[in-house]
Length: 112
Image 1 (cartoon, rainbow, N blue to C red):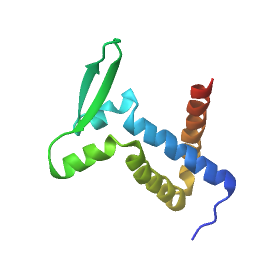
Image 2 (image 1 turned 60 degrees about the vertical axis):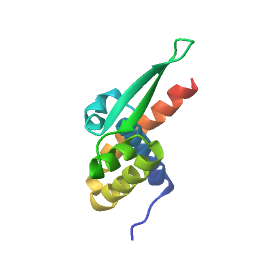
Image 3 (image 1 turned 90 degrees about the horizontal axis):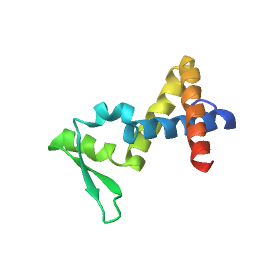
């Protein structure tokens, strides 16, 4: 087992948050979601548009689509990947730090 400082734990948490958000919501990764999800738009009487994601296909394709439309579900798998990367490839820590800083910046932006 590896040791983990509080600072490294915070970096891993923020990196997992940012990577999960990147996969589930950000426009730059829409090409990853496109084969697995169909996006529907609905406009209410106030003119606000809401997007709904529906998984495509069956089997593994539908499973991945269900996963990608759920922030919490995707977060579990992204977190597992972040921990594995941290444990198995210590040289990847600076990359995780970049995602952690971006995650903290995103949180701050929603509060300002």
